[in-house]
Image (cartoon, rainbow, N blue to C red; front, side):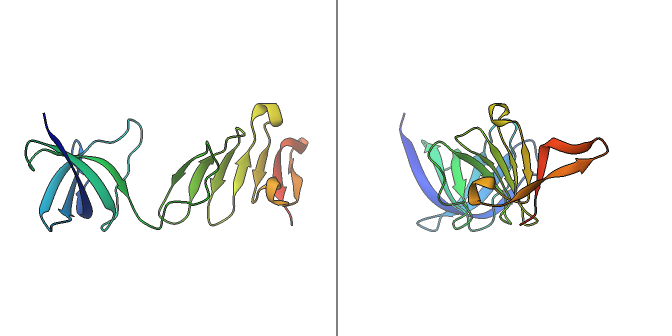
Length: 151
């Protein structure tokens, strides 16, 4: 069986059916209608203009998308071994190699450290960047787990 790999630009997407479909233009200008399988438990809808790669077997009628990326949106400077799920407005869920998790948003970052490091939650910044934090007050007093940035 011969397989052909084709790069394309997304021109439209349909996320309303049982499975996701993309329309795109190949490098030669040909119009492509593609089936887009997604990882179980994750649903995304690429923007128009995103760059994609599809595989075809025997004809241009049976294309399957294997990858899509919106240029310029992917976070840069990833730590080796790190994983990031990111959104269209800079928000991100960063899984760091040290076991901590960072939730990034316009309103501020939140860090959750692994249990071995105290299982603390840092609101509004990253202690590794020198931000200063104070314990969050609860009805029972200062929390040993939740810290908020103050400087």
